[in-house]
Image (tube, rainbow, N blue to C red):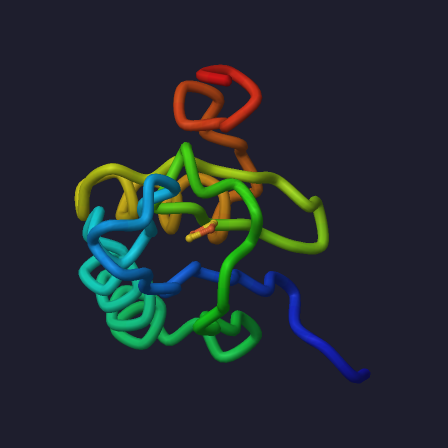
Length: 105
Ligand code: FES
């Protein structure tokens, strides 16, 4: 079957520091991406894909991560939060409510 059990996109967009919108890259999204990628690899999650993404258009809440197929949008401020999303949502299918963009928006 084509596709993945879970497909995770991490915004790594970078803007000039003078841009008032800011960007996920300057808020630490590279570390979030690495934590998810390495965590999935270490856990042997062959049916999960962690992908780099450009701007996901939720810049004010970055670092922004979206998990499919549920299309759940997260604000992921720390590596520990990324690890929780991996453990809870990606592996067990339990959404981490406290990190939902809808919760903080
Ligand atoms: S810069 Fe990351 S969502 Fe726009």
